[in-house]
Amino acid sequence: MTLLQAATAVRERAYAPYSRFKVGAALRSTSGAVHVGCNVENVAYPEGTCAEAGAIAAMIAAGDTGIAEILVIADSPEPVPPCGGCRQKIAEFAAQDVPVTLCTTDGKMKVTTVADLLPGVFTAAHMDRT
Ligand code: THU
Image (cartoon, rainbow, N blue to C red):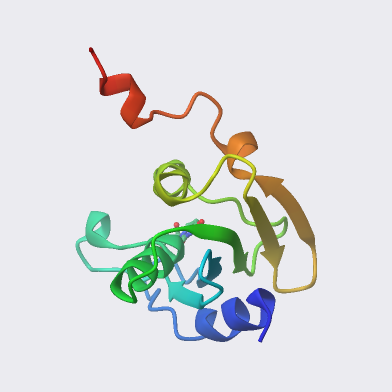
């Protein structure tokens, strides 16, 4: 199954009664396994989680620790970009040159990279005072 197929399928299971904006994400880990996630909203709005966060949680729960590629899909007019928080979450587990594919349900697609999505990323090195 391709990342597009996996993200399209999991998007249908999104729980988005408040925004009515369903998002699916699929990533291939450095081990080769595919992990998926969808957004899960909550009546206490800030408690909702994004599709990318779900896919990353599934990856970690499965014992994988690196993202080789990731794809996000939504029914948006233009390819849906990850929110700022998700860019940082992706950067935690992905090299700067890892491709991030942004998709719409009607077939538009844009390929970018972790570096392009999050210039000036905060890393563990910024906490190193020695
Ligand atoms: N959302 C995602 O799941 N991923 C994104 O990349 C953009 C936004 C979700 C969060 C919320 O449930 C809904 O889309 C509207 O913001």
